[in-house]
Length: 486
Image 1 (cartoon, rainbow, N blue to C red):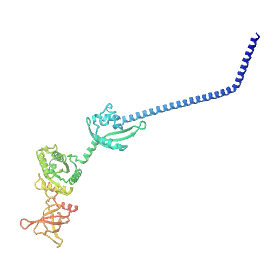
Image 2: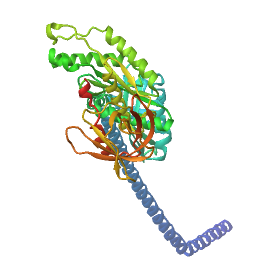
Image 3: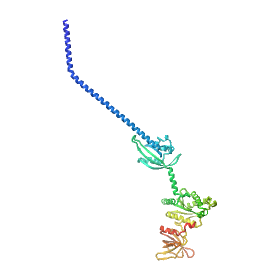
Image 4: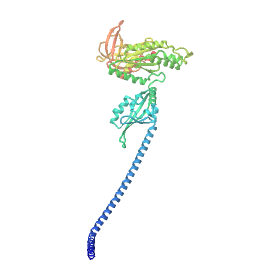
């Protein structure tokens, strides 16, 4: 028993010793644990701080993202509003307007475009502009603008195009084009504005026509006729071609006005002008020279075609029964006409000379009995001098006068004289005395030919080497005027 008790006491003692050792170990371990606990607490605080910071950053990022989304939404709304505003402007502009992309496909078009060109939205948007309306917009000048001119420029204004559209007819348009680069989607757009000026052009043509044509007969007026003749002469010089003119005057037209009235005379002029226009080519021009006198310009023609035209006019004129409600007892108006033909460059070197030769040929037709046509082969047609015109030849070397001579005919560059003396072939001074006691004038002349005539007379052909405009006027005063040959 005692042995068991001793064994138990030893075991208990061993337990106590072991317990004390453990207590001592834990006592020694406690500072280390406290230190570790402190580190763990610090680490926990650090982790909690990081978590709080991350949460705060996430919240900031979330707030920024939300603000950015709201800003983007607002921007997109502004873009949509701007596009809607732009489309609203495009749809309501008065002139037709098309918006194209860089590939020339239609993005949108204004209502006025659809209305003017009778197009539909479903057949327009998304289509290539040249393919619109069964390719009726495949216009060469539009291609020139969009493919050749606009690529090198930002814009282009006042590009005029004429085109015939099936269903709506001929249109004259002013095109304005402008390139726009959109920043949002970096797309390039082309705004093509189309102004239909067809009616304005027609009005301008009517005004131009009124300004250049005679209101009574519809023929080209005097001013425009002279401008057109000047152009034809210039063209004749460039291409070495001829141009002929016909001066036409109604014979004894004054009697129509006196016997029947000026209104009846106007009706006769309208009828006569219509007959002339009916018998000429499309390239020929009929002008009203003044009063009852007309002028016809025949490009690329000499005297022979001019005679053919006159024969046709005379035939129709003779066949036509000319009446007027203003005529006396509404009787038929009996009319005839005379005509003179001149050809450039055969008969003249400029417009004034050409008119003068044609007018002189017309006077010759009147002199020869009226109702006929005359063409002069010479450069300057010669006509009878005004009654009372006299001439004196002076030899400057001898300072002596030849007897006063009779003038057989005269032109702006020479004359035919009748003389009782044989005049030497040399340069002389001609002193011309105008009729009615007016002052005389002098010019140099040269004897070009002479021949024996009947009896003791000589025919002497005289040429004027130099004739100024002033001398031409003086010579014109010595030639019978058209009024004397009505």
